[in-house]
Image (cartoon, rainbow, N blue to C red; front, side):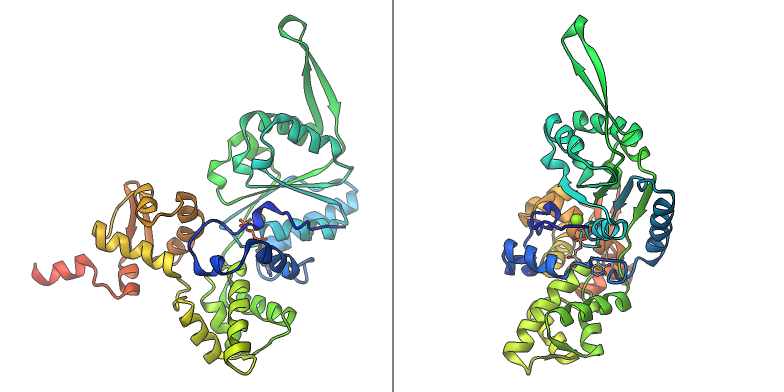
Length: 354
Ligand SMILES: Nc1ncnc2c1ncn2[C@@H]1O[C@H](COP(=O)(O)OP(=O)(O)OP(=O)(O)O)[C@@H](O)[C@H]1O
Ligand SMILES: [Mg+2]
């Protein structure tokens, strides 16, 4: 049985100034996220191509009575990597241990976990790109041969012992697949990127969450929230929660299109789903750096933001929505980005005087 503990590392809202993540306490967010987390394939919305492949691998592993191949899930935050690991454990009827690379700093941390695993158990390591070299090298034989190579003694008397481990499945998750070392990457049998969700898929997420929160919502209301959720179920869920607060306090308790749109306007989530941090980032590049290119460190310092928050939370969606461009010399606002902020693009302005 898959058990989701409340201390899943990845559930920490990332440090940022997003009004949505700031408005709720971390503890509250964790409980809310865990209570609405899909537990099986039927509840898991979207990512259909990925789910098809996974279902086949699960079926095959069950028929062969072997553990699943090691898997790596990557993609922007909040798209369902941790959730998927739990769903897989549930489908395999296997226990799951959840940890994250920063919690495995000392070799004995990873050795302890590996030695405690049971046959067929799933080990989920979040932020796996942050594994240190020593712990990572302990993982290599564990993943490849289900064994631990331990050395004892010093210099001339050094001996290597091979300790067999139960056959387990490692599921790694990362927002930065590019930062994974290639020996580690190569040891995963299945590597899958999670995609941003469509409006239709997010509408389903919104309706499901509204149902769990016991709040009435119309199709148009769900769609209005979905449209501003940046392709991300975690954001969709937070917006449902916020909008439902407005619906209960200011309206008649039902979320329709007007209630959704006016609540999101008050929360300063625009029709692209951009929040104040996203807009501040684009505006800064336009106003202070002539549209860019400008380095991410400079932008982070000017916004008093963490570089990682900008890279992991803000950028992926701005890039995918075509509002921001990444160049070798830094970030640039696209003509679409200018248009979205209602600012005339310099090239367009310039051409009037050529
Ligand atoms: N496919 C889905 N269907 C419905 N809800 C989903 C789906 N994927 C994610 N969610 C919801 O979004 C929330 C965030 O998902 P999850 O924690 O799995 O994201 P993540 O990819 O692991 O993010 P991070 O990179 O920050 O760790 C979950 O609590 C869950 O309720
Ligand atoms: Mg996660």
